[in-house]
Length: 286
Image: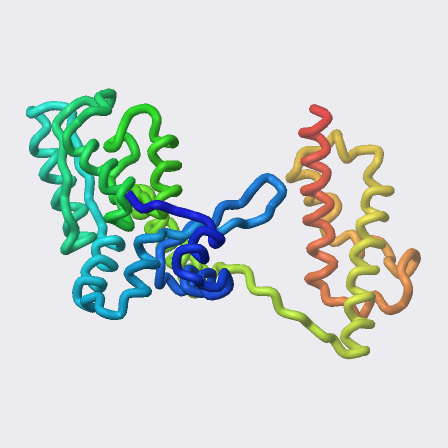
């Protein structure tokens, strides 16, 4: 297991400047850990063995490359509880091997409550010796039923990443669905599209007249129907007040610009009035 020491001890052995050590650590040339204390200060600890290999000029490059590859290797861990579930074990192996080819596979057939399983013991040793860089499982409980957080913390201390394949798949599917939904919304003819309209001065005047006429007729309808709006049903109410502006001289209560307002605007006022009256009757159970 690597022995991590402070920069002062490294300097006593190899006479290397702390800044040089930190640069090597950041570039991944040597093994190192950054420990943050409660005050927020970061302290670097260095692996003497990896520094020794870095300082020796005659180190075989192929050996160094092999060591680096091994440290970044991926291990697939698969487990089932009994021999009756061998088919499920094979399914796990096939699924992970397809997603992560050329990876070592470790298997166990034992309970998730047994922490002395041969495969799990081997996996823990590989993590502690920093021989691997990633552990992949289908679900968290494949590693252990309880204490997963402890194993996760141990892996983090040794810079080993745990990949839960099911979580990765769900996240991938969620992102894919969001992209598809986004595409559908863009293509959908019913999607809401906001368009800024800049009417001319004449158009603004006409809009004002239309809204004003609508409000004026609506108010007059309410005032005129107070005596019988709750006595008549929807059909009778519509027949009585349809064409209100023709039966009564709207010039009496509207400015002269009402003649410029489309007839459809006035008709919509009667429909809104009847609808509002029916809603009011339903609300107050008249």
